Length: 399
Image 1 (cartoon, rainbow, N blue to C red):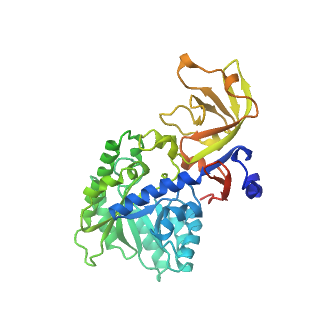
Image 2 (spheres, helix red, strand yellow):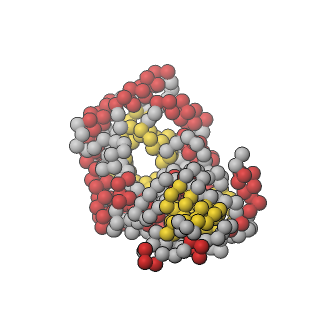
Image 3 (cartoon, rainbow, N blue to C red):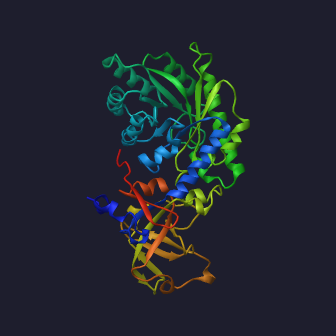
């Protein structure tokens, strides 16, 4: 068993520098501020909000993202996340969960068990292929008491990860296929602008947000007039475009319900920092590592946070992580448990490793991608403004 799972509560009240290394540390004040900023923006716009729980997969953070029940929908990427969030359904602050992956048929028995055993839980599915509807119909034959599944149709607005482009002839055919089925109905249209991470300015992010809104609204036109007059939901968002959500105000049409989704924003990271839409103080996640050795002949140092502790993600920031108080030093190479610190600042100002680090030093690292890094750690150590551990949160692990 991971040592942190056995001992994490014993560190409450201690300075974070006394934690075992490597450890993932969260600043609760930063998380609270990041979440409140987006909640305020959504409230001002008077639109629906569906936080994605894929980053800091925990009951505590999800409760905060929901505004303690002000918003009552989430999107999850794994069955594990859905099961973890059931506690919030039982608390009475969560009603609706979207399984955010285009439907793998093997998930249906698990989801059915949940909706049959958890009162008031509504589970939505993601669809982007008619074969998924065929599986739903076959499943309905052996589960005749199940009501039709509400589904979001996934629209590709440029990420090319999942979904159908609005120009695809398959999209109107899929809409008709769902509406004609007795096993599903169109709840709405959903897109995720993952390519928004390349944005560098508010104007660029606003343009992508406009592409999202335009894409889902064009897809919604394929529904035509609905006999039941049910309002269609169009769900847009990513953390970069969520930062400019105020730009939605002039683009919200009548006749549809606009919903924003985002996931990384409570944490933020170097990838988000490089969009220019957040600042360094909004990064809530750090890794505490320890210097194991120093190599003056190659001007590098070894820390005990490698690929498994940090993740092999990159951005415009050099390396795989940046030393917080020495930003000209980064993790420049990694192996499984080895992280190599190297100087990535201007060559003319190169600092000697022996002046910067000694064996036994504790080193704080900003990370490239919070979603991936957080998944590697069994416990989140939660600190206050003074970097004293005040809480420990155990995330939902696995699929």
